[in-house]
Length: 71
Ligand SMILES: [Zn+2]
Image (cartoon, rainbow, N blue to C red):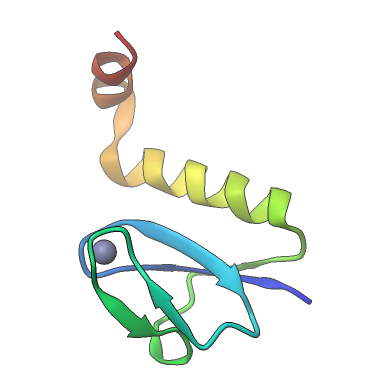
């Protein structure tokens, strides 16, 4: 089994098992996982969550956001 990593239209990075057919984003949108463009695959859930976190940081970028968020 592997995990698929993809983005919702709202910008969130999400992951699910490759057997999952539909996914509901926290923004409320439900979509067909098979039709999303898959950004990455991960072999374990730990890898998947690490990738999602890394990509969120890249997208929302950067040090400024992160620092402001943490303070
Ligand atoms: Zn969304």
